[in-house]
Amino acid sequence: MPKMNRRDFVKSSAGAFVAASSLWGTKQSWAGANDRVRIAVVGIRGMGFSHIRNYANLPNTEVAAIVDPDENLWPERLKWLEENGKSRPDTYVDIRNMLEDKNIDAISVATQNHWHALAGYWAVQAGKHATLEKPGTHNVFEGRQLIKASEKYGKMIQHHAERRTFPGFQSAMDFLHSGGLGEVYLAKGICYKWRNSIGQYPNGYMQGPPGWKRTVDGSPGPIFDQKYMSKVNYDLWLGPAPERPFNPNRFHYNWHWHWDYGNGDMGNQGAHQMDIARWGLNVKHPTKISSMGGHFMFDDDQETPNTQMALFEFPNPEGGGDKKKMMQFEVRHWISNHEAGLGQGASNAIGNLFFGSKGYMVINLGGDWKTYMGKEREPGPYGGGRGDMFQNYVDAIRADDPSMLIGSMQEGHYSCSLIHLANISYRLGRTLNFDPDREKFVDDKEADQMLTREYREPFVIPENV
Image (tube, rainbow, N blue to C red; front, top):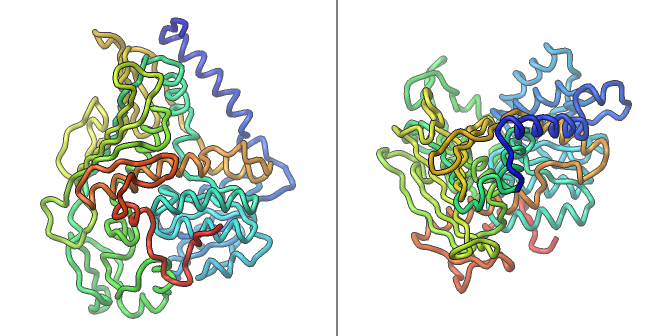
């Protein structure tokens, strides 16, 4: 690689990404176009509300429908659209009814994790494109089925790992892949995110006098009483998951910490950093996985670990020494340090580290990156900048061009599989060997069974796509 000083690298990166922004389209470039894109947002709480706001603010793009089995969420979303001069979308409890509308071009899924893949599968079956919030799958089996379904029905499925659209992350990856750090042998993702106990709740609705609100820390929260639940289709909310009695701690947001619906913080915040770590290493499936951890400190309803460490080994035929690469990922939930300056001055420390033969790189949550080169660890090239995956998705739909789509389902499958493989290792309590070509474990039927789940009829992703 020709020698490049920090100033030259930053200048060349800036020029490259000005060109890239023109290629992918900008908010101005589509102004006045006649081909309006009509989006249905599926799952409208939390991140779903963010999807609504982002699409509504894109030129020539319409939030044409919102879908959620919790009708209590509808009024606030409809009010925001009305107050911002947007047309009123159709409202649906059941995604299947929305998918019958031939005027909907695409869906944007921000449900609980265990619904992501099924929503995407049903969407392409119905002739619509889909983007799936991270992680796009709840298990390894779902990733391969989504790739097949996209090919079979000729519709795009995007893994909505939005940091892939950030010029900061793109320039960092270009630097790594062009040899800027030499041989990159280790990538590390960290998610030190302060999280309190979720407490314990009995099954059933929460009863109390008018205005009574019960949360773990005593702050205001929703009352999941009979009145509230009368507007929730709980069977649809469960979808592919086993039928269980309602519990507030398995419902809004806290579903993340239960295996039936979520994947723990490794599949929540960590999904971004896992994707970036794999992207930087330029690898696909690992051959060896080892994960351990636990649910420390709190005696509550959480099933997933709140502290977890995972190690992955990948083949590296072109590398020196043992011809392999390593990835390390850590979740910590409480008091922690600010590694390599990540999260300095804040409660959380989230980001990535890359280690190579010439130096190391630090990338923060927003894509700002720095390098420290040589034995003296002197400041080297750096970069940054944010992107817009919502715009990219709409541009690819409008052009009907899968090559424009950033965050393909194939790439998403590789990254999501890391989450699932680590969690399988953690739950079984042992190191696992994996065959990347077969996408099966090596002589391990017990582990293979955990590559998929038992789907509850009729919420099934079929074996034969």
